[in-house]
Length: 139
Image 1 (tube, helix red, strand yellow):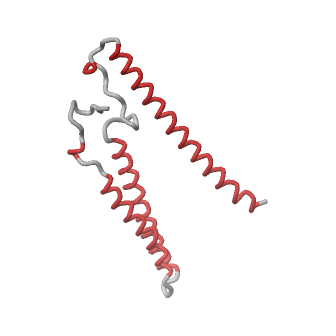
Image 2 (image 1 turned 135 degrees about the vertical axis):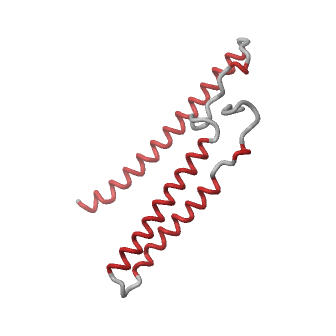
């Protein structure tokens, strides 16, 4: 029975996580579509487009924040993995100093360094903003 649960629990968690991601993506796309339709309807009624609020960004938090959130996630993940790798290396070095088990900490450490580099690459640049009012998203 233990073997059954050790396989079923991760599978259910993965399926649930993927399902939640799909629901979030579909609902966010629907909100963006409704915002665009509302804007088009207002323009058709003769409202000046400059007086309308800016369309929401793809993540709903404003211009560029999707990239900032991704960069922050990569940064946090990189720091955590780097700390885990260093911690594993130190613990394994003290447990059996005559053996080279500390090398097991190198793998998560390098993955953490790779995530930190990816965070640096993804971080949005200041000149990437489109022309227009600050914080306005153009479509």
